[in-house]
Length: 125
Length: 202
Image 1: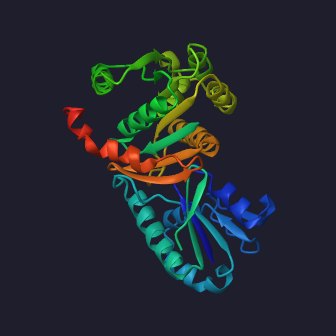
Image 2 (image 1 turned 45 degrees about the horizontal axis):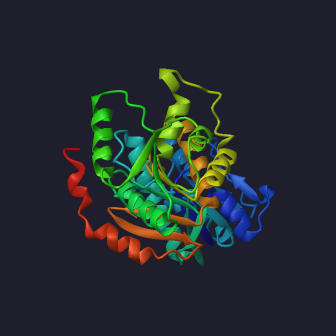
C-alpha cells in the first residue's frame, strides 16, 4: 500500500498522478454517497468515505480490516484533518479520531508514505 | 528568485521572511519593498498592522499598500528591488470580499500570470502565507471556496518558487532550495533576535 496525505488543497492528487504515473481514470474519488470502487489503482478523499460511514452509524476499522486484501496494492490519498482545534460537533470529533486511527493503521502497514505540502511531496517512509 | 514561506499563526514566518528579504537585498545591492496587503476592518486589524510596521522599522523597507493586485504592485516598483509580499491569505480574502461584498467571480485564474509579471519586475520576491488546511471541520461553501482558492495560489507559488520554507513555532523546514541559498546564515540571524517578544499582547 502507498499512502499520500496532506492538508486540503495541497495538490495531493496531482502529486500522486505525477509520482506514480496515474491517469484520472485510475483514481476513484470518494464522495458523500459512501461508495468505494476497489477496481481502480488509487482511492482519493478517503476522509469523505469515513465521514459518510460515521454519519450512517457504521463501524470503520473492522470494515477496512475485512477488505485489507483488496487494499494492499492500492494508493490511498487522504486529507490530513488532525491538526485543528477540537471540533464542537461530536460528528466531526468522531470523524477526525476515526480518520487519525485508521491512517495510523494504514501508515504502519504501508510500503511507502508521502506527505504533500503546497504541491511538494516528502517521503516519510 | 522567488521564495515561498508558510506556516500557522504566530510561527515567526513574517520575521523569517524579513530576514530572507534583507539577506537577498544586500546580496543583490537592491532596495527593499514591503507589499502590504491587509485592508483593516477594525481596531484589532489596525493594532496588528502597527505591530508589523514596528517590526519593520529600521529595516529600510519602502512600503507599498496593494492588497488586490500583484500586477499593480509590480507597476510601482523601481526595478532591482527585493519585495516582501505579506500575505497571500489577505490577498485572497481581499479579492473575495472587496469592499464588504462577496465576489464570486474571483477565481484567482490570473494569479500565475500576475506572479510571473511581478517576478519579472523585481530582483527577488518573498511571499508569505498562512497554512489553514488541516482541521476537521466541514465548512460552509464560502469558507471552503476561500480554502480552495488559497490552496490553489499557494501551490502555484510554491511550484514556481526556488526556495520553499515551512515555519512551525519558529522552526524552519526547507522543502526546496534550488539556488542553494545559505539558509544556515539566514537562520542564524533569525534566531539571534528574540523577535517574538515584540509582538505585544496578542
